[in-house]
Each structure stands twice: as structure tokens, then as C-alpha cells.
Amino acid sequence: MAQKILLKDIDVPGIETFDVFRKQGGYSAVEKVLKTMSPEDVVEEVKKSGLRGRGGAGFPTGMKWSFLAKPEGVPRYLVCNADESEPGTFKDRYLMTKLPHVLIEGMIVASYALGANTSYIYVRGEMMPQIRILEKAIAEAKAAGFLGENILGSGYDLEIYVQPGGGAYICGEETALLESLEGKRGNPRIKPPFPAIAGLYGCPTVVNNVESIAATSWIVLNGGDEYAKIGIGRSTGTKLISASGNINKPGVYEIELGLPVEEFIYSDEYCGGIANGKRLKAVVAGGSSVPILPANLILRTVNGEPRLMSYESLADGGFASGTMLGSGGFIVMDEDACIVRNTWNFSRFYHHESCGQCSPCREGTGWMEKILHRIEYGHGKMSDIDLLWDVQRKIEGNTICPLGDAAAWPVASAIRHFRDEFEWHVNEPKAAMEGNYGLAHYADPLPVPAAPSELVK
Amino acid sequence: MLAVKEIKFSEEMLKQVDEIIKRYPEGKEKSALLPVLHLAQAEFGWCSTEVMDQVASVLNIKPIEVYEVATFYTMFHVKPVGKYVLEVCRTGPCCLVGAEKIIKYLEDKLEIKEGETSADGLFTVKGVECLAACGTGPVLQIGPEYTFYEHLTTDSVDQLLEDLKGRKQ
Ligand SMILES: Cc1cc2nc3c(=O)[nH]c(=O)nc-3n(C[C@H](O)[C@H](O)[C@H](O)COP(=O)(O)O)c2cc1C
Ligand code: SF4
Ligand code: FES
Image (cartoon, rainbow over all chains, first blue to last red; front, side, top):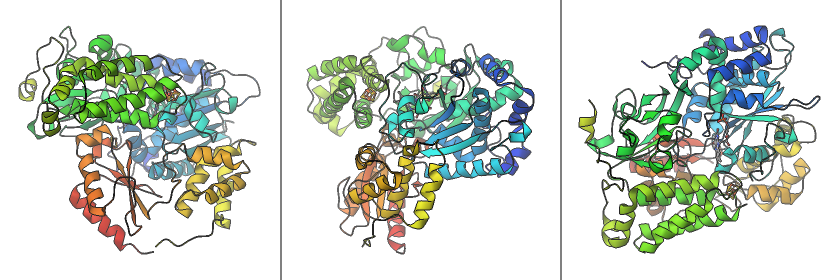
């Protein structure tokens, strides 16, 4: 069995309550940091752990914490990003539903490290049930003396509040989230200044994902070095992967980074193979924003090495033949999935969610949606494929926030790896409306992968 | 049919607003806008101009500050909706497991198009983006408590509609 950190007690009955969580050793990280560690010690341990942000960008958490400005007489804030709206990602919702105290404990540890006396958990508005769960957990922790004034007699004060969003993907972007938390439209801010200097209410702020914050308790209890021993290379620790699509066992899995992708897809401990005896066609490995890869490239790199679930291995080959770990939203498509339709669906998503501040994103996402719709519904021209390529290139890198890139990459990668399927839609519109292209004759000069049965050893 | 309620925050609601405002530093009461809009929508069913004006006056901000926010976020209904808004996820991962079929089934059964409200005023069908439940798709949610209904099939949708029709009030 792989090491479990975040989900280790998930099957303990009643673990969502304070009492059971405490009996399992919960909140001992809070006792340890408040009684024996300085805030700087905590930051140091998290740095040593090599923990990287689990929200998508993978920026080292300890380093982010050490950048926080500390001017005299100005409050500092920790804001937990629980907006979780990246298609394919549902790990934070799972964690908050089943293990709310894991997040609250991590919030206390992280707030102490940053010197924050008020911290917010920004939860997407649709997660009303999770908001209630968190509010209850906070009340329980407070009643037990782990929140409020002078926690455990340490002289440290902390209040945690839960803030609902309003259903806007863009509010997952950290500066849009801060705007939203200030009661405004979720328009991303131009950086710099970064939140570490001027964040919430203009004060120094750290924004971290639910999973990053939750991991810090284990790190301070067991030491950063111990955490760094788990995983592979610079991909340390464990990661929650949300597995969805055409697999036998969709769900949230905690993996040690470095697990082979093939094992993740086909072993019974994880996805349990492709559903209904079908064959694997493609995978979007890190949430809708990362490049899609055909079966052969997700299982092996171009050099023929097994692809691993790690930041580096998934990115191996750059965007030509690789992808990204992103938020760990692992979307699996079988031979019946239509790449054009899925790409259109994602483009509609980004068009819908664009905040509209930058023209390349606001207009470009709309054009991409329209062109893809045209191709999918049998009215496409061959030149549309090149036009699509052109539009996505003009969005990428030309916008205020990374949503523009996130909208461009799925389109670019779909054309890069599945161009023949786009051309088939143009050439055979009637067949495309009625049927399915099936397994692609991949554009890459790589062998088409063997049937699943042969892949499971 | 929906009873027409007077658009005014009750004592109880005002108390809740006071509690919410305490979460933020002094002078930052505007941060309460999203939570208070949720509160108002749960009470009044949708965010009409009157509702938004009430929110503005309760938070002591300008009405335009409320309008621009309410129209930005998809959760706030700025047009009238049915008693139950069925928000069905229509994003990629759910479509891989049949979300489009569920939306079509609802449209046919209720004789409306996505975005519309059934003739009896009971149901609005709304296609929404990924609800962070892709592993248990197809899914839909119903406010104001945002209860999730997962692994939808045409049978479970039939059952759900029957249950909702049978509810009192
Ligand atoms: C469009 C967009 C959406 C995002 N959505 C989320 C999200 O839902 N949750 C999240 O934690 N980070 C999200 N991020 C990343 C955040 O901006 C930020 O990097 C992250 O919260 C930092 O936390 P971490 O360092 O712990 O990963 C998003 C970024 C972009 C550009
Ligand atoms: S890239 Fe898109 S979402 Fe980001 S700020 Fe510009 S318009 Fe808004
Ligand atoms: S795609 Fe439907 S919940 Fe994520």
C-alpha cells in the first residue's frame, strides 16, 4: 500500500467530528507548533519538505510563505483557495466533505507560520453543504480551544471564516479570488504587485490551495525531511488525484508522486482500467487546462520511458509530447470519445468563464467555441483548423491572467495530436455526425498502444 | 404558484447580516456582499432589482455595486426562475458519462429548452459548468441548499421530479 497522508483516516467512522479526529491524533500539529516552534521554524520545515502548490501551478509552498512581506502594524492574511472549479478536479470537495478537520488543522498551522490572525477559506458557492461542514468544524475546534484568543495559552489568536463564492471559475485565480472576497466582480489583478506584498485589502496575503494547506500538519509533525523522502525527485510527497471519465473506478486517490501512469489507470487499487472493456484513447492528466495526450504518449514519453505521475515526468517532452500535472484532475477517454466534441465543450467552458477584461481571451475564446462548434456539427472547412490554431496562438501569453493560456492549450494539443480526427470531421461531416472516429491514427509517429489486456502485465 | 413576498429583510435576516459583517475588518463590510446575496436569493427566490436594492441598503453600498456583482456570478438569478432550478453539469468529464443525454431528457420531459422554466412554474433547467463532482457524474444540484444528485439516470431523474412535485408548500 502506498503511503497515505491526507486520507489516512478517511475510513474511520465519525472522522468528520472533532472528537474522533482528535482521538486519531488530530490537532497534535497545532500543539507542536504553538508549544515548540517559532513561525520561522514552521516555514523552514515546509521549505525542506519540497511541498509544491497543489492548486495547479506547483509553486513551492515554503518559498511562497517566505516571500510574505511583514511590515509593522499591518495585518497579514492567509486565504485558502477552495474554489475548485477546474473541470475534472473534485479532490478539495472530497477532502472538505469527509475530513474537514484536516483542513482546519492545516489552516491553524499555516496561519501561525505566516503570522495571520484572521484567515479565510473561500469556498465555491455551490458547495453550500461543504460550507456548513466547515463552519461546524470551526465551531468545534473553537469550543475545544484550538481557535479564538490565546490558543492553548500560547498568546496566539486566530479566527477562521468561510466565505462563499458565486459560481465563477475565474475566482479560482488568486487575485480574482481576492477581488471576490472584497465583494467585487472576480476580475484578476495585474501583477505585480503580488499578493505577498499587496493582497487582501491591500495587505500581505498568501493564497494556498486546500490540499497544500492540509499537507502542512503532517509536515510539521513528521518533519520536512520525512515528507521529502516520499515521492520522486522534486515531486515530493503525496498528491490527491481526481479520476473521472471512462474508467471502472472514478474517485479521489491519494498517490505517492512517481506512480507510473499505466499502473494508475489499470491497477485495481486505482482506476481499475477502462470501463466496459473499451480501449484507452486519450487522457487529460491535470484538469481541463492542461494539454490532452493520446494513449501512447500518456503511457510513455517519446523516449519510450514509462510516464510517471509527477510534475517532471508528465511535463517531459514539453508541449510537443508532454503535458502537466496541474491540479491532478485526471480525465480518461475511451475509444468512443470524440476529441472535437470534447475540445468544443472545453472552449465553451472557457468562453463562458472568461472575465472579459482582455480582448484576446474574451474574443478569442468565443471564436474558438464557434469554430469548433462548426467543425463538430459538420459545417467546418479545412481552413478552420488552421484558423483555430492561429487564434489559440494569439491568446496564449497575451492576457492578464493564465485563463487565456488555459483556454488555448487544450485546443492546441487537440490539433497537435488529433489533427486527423479534425480533418475527418471536415471531410466526412455526415459520418462524423452519425458515428465516431474511434482510436486515432495518431499524428505522432509512435506505435498505437496495445490493448488494455496486454498492458496489465 | 410562488407567493409574492414583500421584498424586505426580516429581523432574523438582518441579524444574520450583522453576524456576517463581523467576519471582516472594520470598513470592509462590502466583503459581505456575496454571502448576503446568497441569503437574499434563498429568501426571495431570485435577485430582482428590488432585492438587489435591499441588499445595497442593508450593506450601505451603492445599488450599482450590487448589480455589477450579481450579474457577474452565475449562481445569482437575475431573471425569475422556477421553484426548483435544476442545475445540470454540462462540462467535458460529465459528458463522457452521459450528461448530454440527461439534459436532453429533462428538456423533452418538461417540454422546455435549457434555460427555460416549465409551464407550471416548478422547474427551470439550467446547464452549468463543472460542479467538482466529475467522479460521480452526471450530476445536478438544486438550491438554495445546493443538494447534489449524482450518478443520474433517466430513471433517477423521473424519481427526482416526482419527489419534488410531491413536496409541500
Ligand atoms: C483560471 C484559474 C483558475 C484557478 N482555479 C484554482 C482553484 O480552483 N483552486 C486553486 O487552488 N487554485 C486555482 N488556481 C491557481 C491559483 O491562482 C493559485 O495559484 C493557487 O491557489 C495557489 O495555491 P497553491 O500554491 O497552494 O497551489 C487557478 C488559476 C487560474 C489561472
Ligand atoms: S485572461 Fe481572460 S479571464 Fe484572465 S483577466 Fe484576461 S479576460 Fe479575464
Ligand atoms: S464535469 Fe460535471 S462535475 Fe465536473
